[in-house]
Image (cartoon, rainbow, N blue to C red; front, side):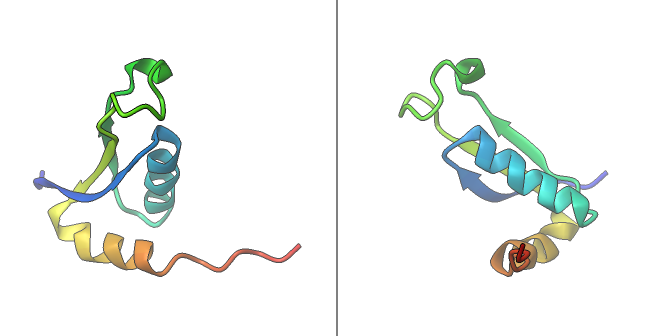
Length: 75
């Protein structure tokens, strides 16, 4: 198993989990680390945000995916 490296930090749990899901859909295991007391302190400065970790060998692809998100679908 490879070492996890920091990919990005987000202010909210929702942002971090959306990105983690996007990475997962593209075959990259993403782990979200953070604590906002179960949502009790969501958005307050008491939370230090949420960090996304990915395997070291997937960091360049994950960075590329975040830098070039898919275009929004037209309805």
